[in-house]
Structures are given as C-alpha cells and as structure tokens.
Image (tube, rainbow, N blue to C red):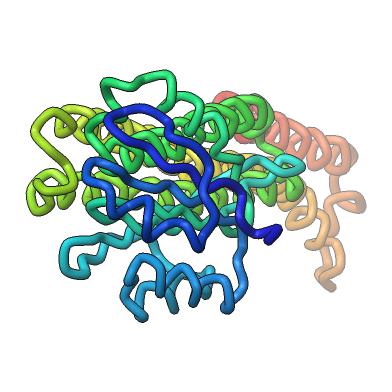
Length: 323
C-alpha cells in the first residue's frame, strides 16, 4: 500500500526488522517489542485495518482521517492520541499540515497529512540511539515532537528577516499600500505559526504529569526541553507580531503627520493671501473718496502696507514652522 511509509519492529532499543500489517500482532506479542508504523495520508480502509490491529479508539481514528484537527492530546485507556501541526515554507508562504500520533505501550502509529517533511531522519536518529530507543514508544514520541518543533524555528527566523527587510521602508511619510499588505501577510503567517507552536507546551506538560507509563522518568527532561523550545518560539513570535502591528501604526502616523504638514502650509499661504484679498475687496464698494482719487500716494501706500503685512505674516508663520 502506497500510504504505508514504513513498518518496523524494535526490541530493547534495537531494530528487529520490517513487518507487514498482518504480522504486527505476532510481533508485539513478544515482551519488550513495539512496532512503529508510519503512514502518509491513508484512506479509510487502511485506517480501519490499523485500528483493528492495534485496537485504536474509533474517535481517534475518525480524527486521523479528517486532517482538520487542532493540536491536542487525548487519552484512551493506556494509549494517547496526539495531534501536531507541521509547517513548511512554500513559495515564501507558511503552509501548515498535520501529524497524528497514536502511542500505546507497544506501538507508535504516525499519520502525516499535508505539508510535512518525511520522518525518515527521525527513524534513523532513533535507530542510532539504542539507549534512548530502549525506553520504548515514549522515546519515539519525543523524537517526532522534537523534529516537528525544530522545523518551526527556521520559519520563525525567516519571518523575522522578512519583517526586517520591510521595516526599512516603513518609516517614511508616504503611504505604501504594497508594503502594508505585505506586513499584514507576514502577520497572518506569524499567527498561523504561533497557533501551531503554542499548544505544544501544554501537550508536553500533560505527557509529563499524566502519562508516566508512556513517559518514564528518564524521558521527562526531554519533553521539558521541547516545552522550553516551544515557549521561546511563542515569545519570539509574539514580539514579531507586536512589532508588525507597531510598524503599521507608525507608518500610518507618519503619513498623517505628513498630511498635517501639507495642510499647515496650505493654511499659512491661505492666511497670507487673505490680507490682499480683504484689502483689495474694499475697492469694490461704492464710496465717494477713493484713495487713488483723493490722495496722490494712496495706491502705493495701500499696496506697500499690504505687502509688508503679508511679509510679516509669512515671517511669523515661517518661524512657527508652518511654511
């Protein structure tokens, strides 16, 4: 079946060999043996077969078939069902997939959906650490979760770098619609990645506190390390999100300030032009003694006084920064 990536039996930290689905019951019946089955976007028929082999809870199987679950941990007897969001960068866009993990005393079933890297490096890493693998399915669960969280880090760093590149052009008094749209797009991706990372800390806490049978004392420090990485990533993403919001607000504030400067200049010139407008509008009135008719120097005096008044107002507005 193409959906079966790998199916391997392990005993006392060592790889026993690949097994077929029909051979799994016989393999896990041997004390100290567990099977790690890796699936990629399986269909309902395959999941039903896996359910019968491992005795998986039907609700968990239903969730694994529908790849639209939130990150969570659910307990079913002596087994757990863990949902993690995986993330990859596809054409400068953070794309989220899902990994569903069924973990019991003698099995691990990993189901990948959507954007997700192959878990072949995780399997190779576990097989090169027989001491850790001797802890059973709990160690495989740790390795898979650690792999997923490690892949969040370069994405967060990439989003930080992209924001830093855009930040240089934001602090201008000109409105850049494309830059604002790009900032909004980055913020959307930051929120998407944060929603994937944030639940990991709580999942690790539940595994440490409530599932000592799957997570022995020797493995608790490993899950605390994952929780620490997730916590630091969440804080980093929160800082980037706040900076994105602030950058948009600063740009809009600078644009508003620039517009206010233009309005101030227009208002200043309008005040200067108001003086000659008021003075010269007097000549449209009908009265007997026009300055130009009764006083030889009336015209130049009126024009001179108007010019001096305009110059004085300009100087005062210039000192005030309006012009």
